[in-house]
Length: 85
Length: 474
Ligand code: SF4
Ligand code: SF4
Ligand code: FES
Image 1: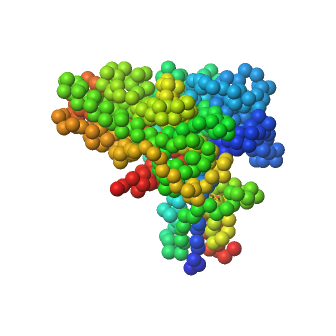
Image 2 (image 1 turned 30 degrees about the vertical axis):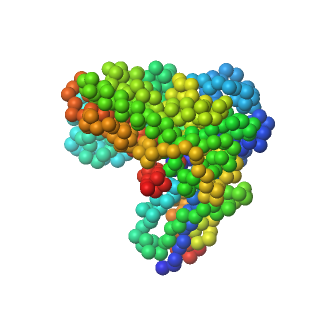
Image 3 (image 1 turned 90 degrees about the horizontal axis):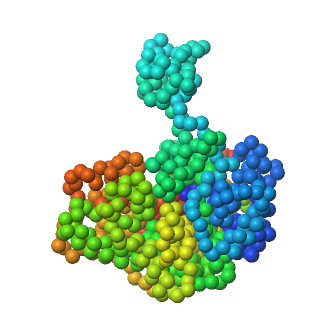
């Protein structure tokens, strides 16, 4: 199984826009991901400072950026990477 | 409000953008355009069309500018004019909440409804047990006659398929004192002779129809003008950002506040006086005494349990003492309380020592608008001192611990905790006035878990409590 890294931004902008709610993903991942997915909290990823990147909160999944991140969007991105897209 | 829903996200975004315009000195010029930038022509409408969405955004911005949606007399009055008024005003007016009737979807009154899970079974317990003969079978499925139904809920309980649901009106359902109800048109309105400013309706409404009248622009403007503005941080505020508290203090100073004073310093005075008052009153034979720092609780007693008022401590709140301290130490300053609480806005309006109240969410919006990143900020220390007990005032049980620490030992304290003011606890509080009690001190917190569970927070109560613990453990 591929190693997947989820970086949840806890910089001020993302925190204010609700990134803490995404931390819950730890408890929501299905069993088969428990081993391969690593979840990290990071300081500002820098996206909020360049307006084109979309809107906070931001999460990075294996380097791919998820803007306006929600539990759903992040889980979908994990699935997508897992399927090899 | 923790942002796990779209309604609260929109409000936070608007707070940030409005504050940014104010710091850039472009509030009046840019505020009308903000409506269009938020809902551009080609966006997917949340409601019927972009025009309705824009109308709602306009009222949200009125609330953010500190106005009531209800005060609108002329629909053609532009936001820039409201902004102009906000930039001029020196006084804040009541009420602290506003209902945006354009956003309220006039949810149908709480009723029972048969879903298509119904199989029109042979036993038909719903029909047989309904005391009002309100259920008929049509096309093989149960149907409720709304004119006959009295919402007793028996059908819901007896259906073996769980096919019948009760549809609540979320705000009315959340209000513990029946203060919010429909007007003739079905839209909600708040009866302020009953409202205790708990903010539950605001967090419950999925349309975000109930908003606070913010003071963010009053504060932002004073910061931009370089006035002397002191930030008074509530004990629970210390845990709301993912950084050291000292960094948060640094960030507040960087945002332009001239000083930071921990409200915990006021909590030390409150705890000391409250302990003295407790010993005196109990030794004089009073049955019990309750805490006094939660304004929702005091409002609830005043408006709904008047017989309880004589048991409430007369000691002023930590916010009040901290405000007095700020005015003494920094003469001429504007004192801004920063915490999780809506009702503190009301308390501040009634007192003299606090000029403005911001929620932690609004402080966050100010930091974002100023591009201040707390984790990258130089830590700062405040000159004042506060005890560990006072710093834990914001979590349930904290007040009791702080009072305990200040007792002289003459009277034994037997504490009771009311953690969250729901209908049940309100009834319980009414009952203890008359009945016999096996406690002599009652700590009452409107929010479950204490102020760390307040509506204006950014972190979950558990995370906030943990950060506070980590910061202040010796
Ligand atoms: S929950 Fe209440 S305020 Fe919100 S839309 Fe429904 S009726 Fe209106
Ligand atoms: S603020 Fe609380 S008391 Fe007032 S109407 Fe809303 S839910 Fe009811
Ligand atoms: S705070 Fe998350 S990208 Fe900057």
